[in-house]
Length: 138
Image (tube, rainbow, N blue to C red; front, side, top):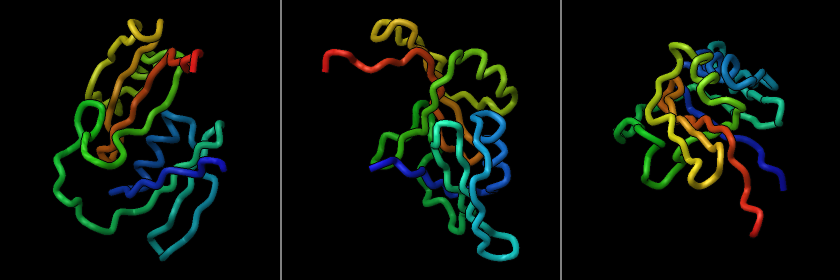
């Protein structure tokens, strides 16, 4: 079995596509037209991770806006990406870096592990971290 994708419902799919393309290396892999002004857009990055973008067609159910590292109720807490340098990545994000928590240094657990969380255009929390490694004694 291979992981397939994460689907995101977006207020403005073009803006969300631009965000993940500009800052996380995604590019269009497929577009499925639904109507004249609506389509499903699959984005793919170099590691074959896919995002499937849908235009939201319902109002948000009223949960509080995601903060810090994401919601703590049942559901997806955040999307996460590994980078070489958290600070450089946040700087490159410029005004798109809506930081919700951090950067935090987790070197006490893993030397060099550093993480920051931010919002994407739809308010989803995105984690950006550097230095994470798997535990070797499992």
